[in-house]
Amino acid sequence: MKRIAAVFALFALSCLLCAGCVKPAAQKTVSMYDLSRAMLDALKTEETMRYVSASDAGAEEKFARVSDTDYADVEDFFLLYAENGAGNADEIAVIAVKHERDASAAADSLRAHVEYRTQLYATYDPAQVPKLNGALVFTEGKYAVLIVCDEPTDVKTAFYAFLAEGTE
Image (cartoon, rainbow, N blue to C red; front, side):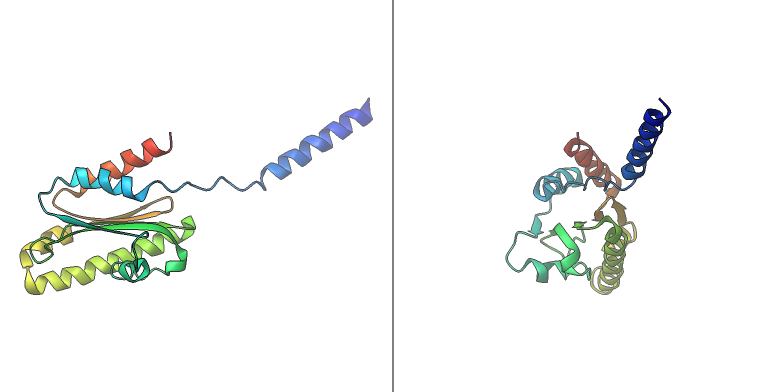
């Protein structure tokens, strides 16, 4: 009887040890196009917004205009920006990195992008600078997000609502 208990205890202990070795499930990337539509709806703008994504021809070059993140680390992305950039600094960017550990570096690159645009707009359209100063840059899981608009919290709320729907 002691042998059976000892074997059972050893088996239980080995199961517990192996449980710590299991890799967590990878976070699934949501449809970036659908996410962009949800965030665009929350933007509530009359401005025509251009859409750029990883699916476009020349995507890596287009991505480099908003982030200096190594494109090899990017799983997917989209960028929405005001077609008339001379009169409107509105912009939304979402980068899905392959590894969650790279999300904060991607967010840092988005912050650098905002700084550059703030300096640019200070020169030729200073009325847009307060909007850029209120930009939101944050991470959630493997996503780095940039929101530049008059009401960025509404767009941020739409981002989180979409992620919640996509994971149910």
